[in-house]
View 1 (tube, rainbow, N blue to C red):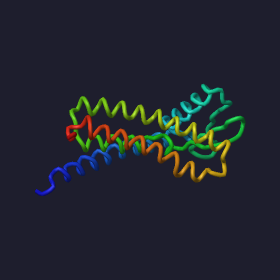
View 2 (view 1 turned 45 degrees about the horizontal axis):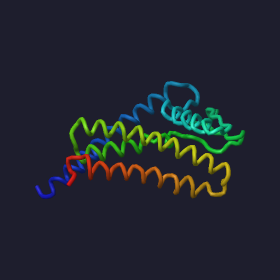
View 3 (view 1 turned 45 degrees about the vertical axis):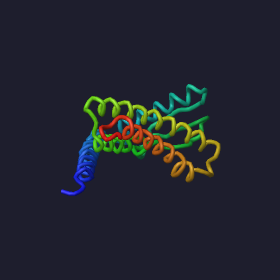
View 4 (view 1 turned 90 degrees about the horizontal axis):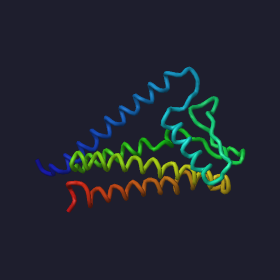
Length: 177
């Protein structure tokens, strides 16, 4: 078969992505059906709490509360509502994409597992920093919300993941040259 390596890469990538995304989707579905009222999933709540903690560590007057009529958390700075944190903000989809890429490029199981774990933890931390900076920027530059939320901060997070991928491919995977 021609291009066996490419087909192997694509099969590993899409299989890993599919099964991880399916597992995450099923977990979200089960979490949503357990409560009779609006309560954001555990991971999103933890990301919001971490953001709250980070902002408070810089002396910011911040708090987070559950939105009463939707699956989101409201983030307030100085008693001003600045952002809502929804499931899509928790970074899990990006971590799934990151791990699928690692699996597709193969490395030893030990190295892949270790780099996957370290990478996901660092993505979590960068994501919390992203949300904190975005909330702070929205407090002061609300008229730039579209640019900040839809372009600048996603570019920073995806750029970071891209750098992790480059490190993996060029230094750590069995594909390295």
